[in-house]
Amino acid sequence: MSEKPQETALSKCPGCEEPLEPGDLFCGACGYDLSAVPAVPKDRPTIALAPPPAPSGAPAASAGDAPDVPDVSDAGSGDFELAAPDPAAAAAPGPVPAAGPAAPDPRTPAPDPVAAAPAAGGKVCVACRAGRVDDDGYCENCGHAQPRERDHMEQELGSVAAVSDRGLRHHRNEDAFAVSTTALPDGSPAVVAIVCDGVSSASRPDEASAAAASAANESLLESLPRGTHPQQAMHDAILAASEAVNALAREPGPAAEQEQHRRQNAPACTLVGSIMANGLLVVGWVGDSRAYWVPDDRTAGPARLTEDDSWAAQMVAAGLMNEAEAYADARAHAITGWLGADAYDLEPHTASFKPDRSGLVVVCTDGLWNYAESAAELAAAVPADASQRPLHGAQVLVGHALDGGGHDNVTVALVPFAVEPQGAGSACGTS
Image 1 (tube, rainbow, N blue to C red):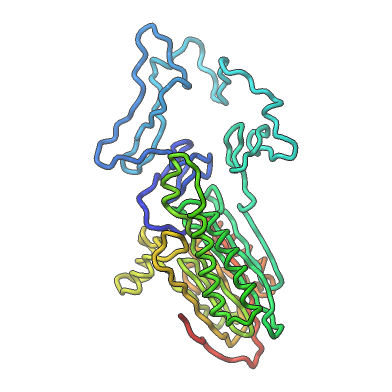
Image 2 (image 1 turned 180 degrees about the horizontal axis):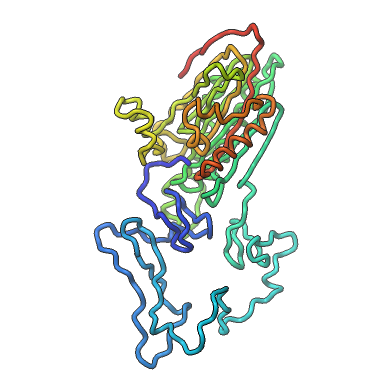
């Protein structure tokens, strides 16, 4: 998942101690709101805080009465854990019960089964099977985060197909895609694939990627049939996507104080897209999502068609590191270009090619290429029949990322490119 430069984040969830990824705003296991966690002090020793022991003869405080004070138990990682209750205060006569679910507090009234049941037509929680799921995707009874429709998406449209998956570590899918077909003024077909990756350190990254993919796709479906050159159409589509993401930052946000930093950190995403039209292959991008070319004849070499807007790419371009060193660095995925209201001067990149042989265009987020970074590695992961079965090919590539660890959302679109045997040509130019 793409990230703007940011401060070091927590490594474990304060609520359930599940590992976190840098830039996560919610825990993927329990839905804990990480924005409410206080910052870790950097210049003071770690001190474990716990409520003072109860005076002799005083009743022990219940868990509900205990102050909500975090215990900073690991200064190196910045993890937070709840302090263990004082043994003297927690002691109670009687045998120790066997491990298992905690008994309900007898002072708490039993829930009303009628009130707890979801309204007719409402979604039922997958965890407690009783609570109603609210509009944010959480159970109103137990607070469990629910599977979302965007957790796994697939689409096949003619010869183009795309698959997107949440991955194995994140609580939601912040990637988005759009695939479509249209016709040029002469009646020849044009095939479009757009893939966007929400910037995890920004607010509402899932909304940003969805808005960008939709806006870019709509722009292309409007301009290509009018006869706009595909490379110019791609440039204009990226600008349209940028405006759609910028508009999200202008929308009024929640008034809660804990949301303030998110509104200041504007929604953002990366974008990469391809157009196949009239024997021409056009790609466009901003950020570190990529497009690759994989020829059907695997004896010919594959190629990466895009250059990342990232810290690692800058280090390689400046000759300060080789690719292996740069992408092994913790700063590798800090992007230098993105779509969003707080982006620097937007510079859409476009390139056009005229392949001389049939092949496959792979348009993907870093959730895939993290596990197949070079063009040769990616081509090795693409099934031999992917041009004939693009949806299956996309499914296989997503599976490759999940088998590799699935640490990020992963999205890939496959666009087969057919060339007549007598066709010939080379790269037409880049910008």
